[in-house]
Image (cartoon, rainbow, N blue to C red):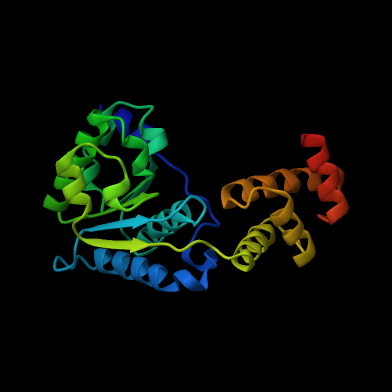
Amino acid sequence: MKNTSQLALSVQLPDDEVFDSYHSESNNAVVSQLSLFIEKAAQSQSSQPGFLYLFGLTGVGKSHLLHACSAYASQLGKTSVCLSCAELLKLSVEVLDGLEQIDVICLDDIQLLADNKLWQQAIFDLYNRVLEQNNSLLISGDQSVGQLGLTLPDLISRLSWGLTEQLKPLSDIEKVLALQFRASKRGLILSDDAANFLLNRLSRDMANLISSLDILDKASIREQRKITIPFIKDVLYQLK
């Protein structure tokens, strides 16, 4: 089962989701805390809490920052893995067997386990094993612990231990900067006007905006056109 688990948990991190690519002045203190948490984990400082809970509304960059934490841990020479609860729910809880041996474990979107007692128990057990190994666990959710809708009291209690950080919503300016950064990593130039046009015409959720940017990127390569407002209109019209 361990070999199967290791295969299932072989997750590729996005190259552009690191601390430096997260643009949000209002969340600088949270980013600094996450960075410090990983640095202390890498130094095996047992005096620090081995758990951190990160929460915020959809679209504030929780997944981005968990990916960044995992990437930073790897950069510091530690083993790490970043997993989505959405993906875990498709697998057996046995996929978590032996995971506590990894130095830094990141679990995204724990609110998705609210109606699954089996998985809540599995995460609770993993939490205990991770701390016994003196390793570190980061978990994200879209609400504070008490509002997640979890039904396992022991897990709720565990999630309330350690550090808790809340991400504030991104401003429109921060979303524009994030889109332009993603575009630049693809070799694209996204003007302020084009970025604001996307922001005003589409859902302001960052995941949706980045998905739309991916579509525009592929269309731009295919048609050998720059991403201008007329081009964006053409591509979005074709998608309707």
